[in-house]
Length: 350
Image (cartoon, rainbow, N blue to C red; front, side, top):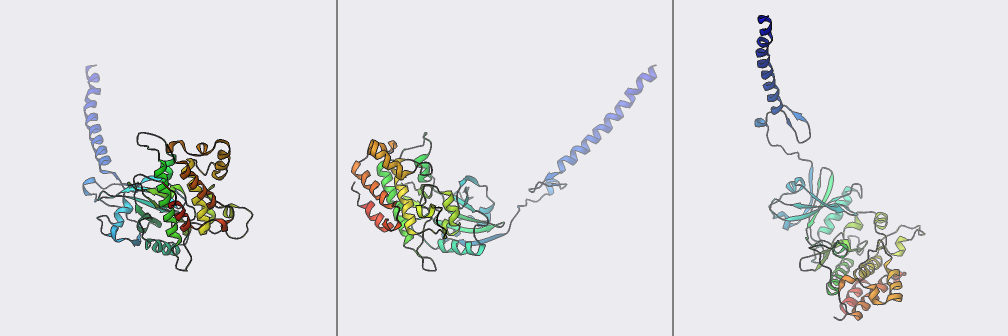
C-alpha cells in the first residue's frame, strides 16, 4: 500500500523536470521569432537582425534649392510618418514633420488623373513660377508608383477653416478689415496667374477660386494654393466637386461641347468667394447670389452680413457686394478681368 502510494510522487518529479525543460525550449523559440516590417514571421534572433527599411522605387521630378539645402532628403521625407489633413480634388493632403524639425504639407496625387509624362511636365512648369502670392512648391517626386507634391505648411490653415470652423478657445472671428484684406490678396494672386502663360501661349486659369485654396500666413496675408489642379484633373471632375462655385456656362447640362475653364469663369468663382466672405455662408449649401438678393430685399444690409464680422462700414460692404455681383454676371462678357477686380477692391475706401 505504501509502495503504491509513493508511485505518483516518484513519477511527479521527472514529469516536472521534463515539463520545465519543454517550456524553456518553447519560450526560447518564441523569443527568437520576430515579425518583419511586412508582417512575415522570421526565425532570426533579435541580436542578429539588422535594421532594415523597405525602400520603394524613388524618382525626383524637381527640387527647389530651398529644400535641396535642407537637412532632409527626399527618401527620408517619403518614409516619414504622415498626419492626414484632408481630401481634395487633387488628392490626399498630409502634414509631415521633417527630421530637421520643419513642417511641410505633402499632397499625394490621385492615381490615373493624367499620364505620368504629362504630370511631370506640368509639375516642372508650375515649379518655375515663384511669387509671394502663391503657396511655395518645394519639390515633387514619385515614390512606389505614386506622385507627391511638397509645399510650405501654414499653421493657421485656410480661409474656409477660419470662416466656417467651429468656435473654440483658439477660434477668432474674422473682422471686416481682415476679410477685405484677404479678398485683395486673393484677387491679386488670381490676377497674377491670369497674366502667366503656358508653353503654348495660353493664359493660365485657376479652375475654381475657393476659400479652401486661400491659405493664411501668420501676418494674415493670403496666398493661393491648388493652382496646378486644373492642369492635372479633368474639368468635369472639378466641376462636379465644386457645386455653387462654378460659372453657369460650365455647370449647365445643356452644352454638348467640352467644358473648359477660362479667366472669366475664374472671375465668377471669385465673385462667389467675395459673397462668402461677406455672408459667412457656404456656397455649396446656399446659392449666394440669390441669398444676397432676397436677404437684401427683406432685411437690408444687416441681414446679409455675417454677424461674426462685428461692426462694418456699410458703404464699404455695399461696394464689395457690387463688385461681387458684376463678377457673377450670367454672361461671361459682362464680367470684368481680374486686373480690373483688383483695381475695384483697392478703390474701396477705408
